[in-house]
Image 1 (cartoon, helix red, strand yellow):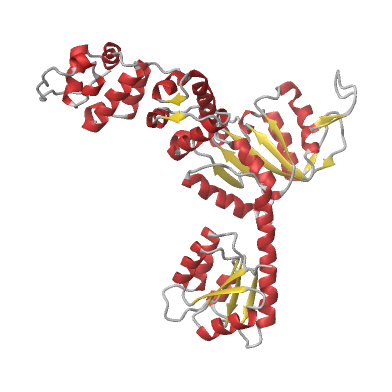
Image 2 (tube, helix red, strand yellow):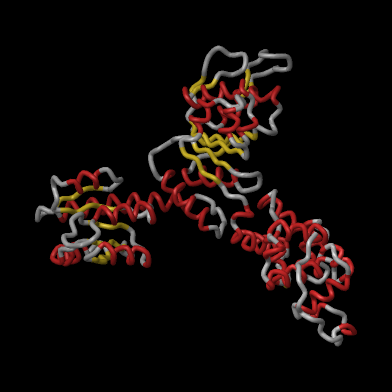
Length: 465
């Protein structure tokens, strides 16, 4: 059986050597005599647990610095404090952190330390098992990767607090809720408050008893009761009526529900997750959302950025969707594809991108995806394309390379029709022709026109729409 890799960090070389000798029968021991070198080891090696001294005499950084670094960057790694300090400020600070154990250097601490390490490794295995159960939130965005580190840290704690997810439609709010439920190993029941009719919302959420209203021919268990001992996901909570908000507040606050027509409350045990694309603080100011409910829901708040704000994911997701729709067949992806995709603002976010890629795969007849196909899938005309460029760039301040790029893409968008391209820029063909000659774009011209003498280059002004 492979031994777990344990890192000992101590400025006392004798402690490092003795620990390695005494514990190497059960663990693989790695040692470091400074906090700086320990950080490098943790970054590059699969360290399962760290044993940390607090006092590094004469060093710039002490054990507390390393502990805080682990909590921030490698929260999955448990740590044990092994220190000779007994009544110092560092000891007090260390015990405020979520350490596995605090072991004092008393000359006979080896057995106690061994037990503490085993306890920490058991916690690490439990964390890894939870992570294994969870689904992967696919992303290349450093912002989202950092966010999920914080989510993992929260879910690994004993907290059962509510979570609020903010983000535009299509950014992945429901997927994040699924990730959370999988991580903690509990069943997820969801209710979309934007799609449940207001007339039946209370019955849908809380259930009803027979005879509670016309048509209630039997008892009905509501979604909240169905989610008992699991996770309840309130999607689009910003669309919830004030009357229903009051009843939800009671369910979250008192952990009990009251079925429609009943006078006997039922106890429930749930973790609540809510999501919305609306600004709940603004709704509170407008008296459309209860402040006390918001305060119950937003104990921990996570913001999913829009797709246009994470350019890394535009290329990553589009490639992923192309592979999904290709059915194993090879498609050539022209570099202009990604450039065209990155120009779009993606109001529908990932959901919209998936639909666009699916349309592009149908529109292409040569198993080649390029900017022309993407513009068609986006239903963007050449004129609209230039408007998009203008909205992104100040044409008066554009550099030559940017102007060249705009001309190339516009001619591509008009499928080589220079007259149409000129109209998009609001100029006549001769002006566009001079720009093409000025910026050495002769390859865009028909072969019969390429041999004409190059026009003077003292052309001023840039295209405007």
